Length: 124
Image (cartoon, rainbow, N blue to C red):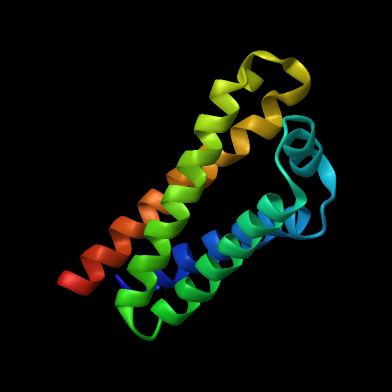
């Protein structure tokens, strides 16, 4: 189980950092959509910072599981919000935004599987 937890944690960390960079740099489609829909630069950067905190927690969780479980819960909440945001704005129906709107769904699934693996490894 240890190998699975490490692999999932690293994979989720890499994907989350890629997501966070555009928000921290105020660049790309994420920033454009958030700005055009009334979200501030501070909110966008704050979201990116929370993603980075989640990554740090996942890496710390490789050494002490409660950190990893907590980080996975944080990332689950962030990606669930992102999915809800895209659904509320109808991005799934817009061909030019569909690919961008699907990314949080994949990250949410990956965060869920990582959370379950971390939880199972810390209990058993």
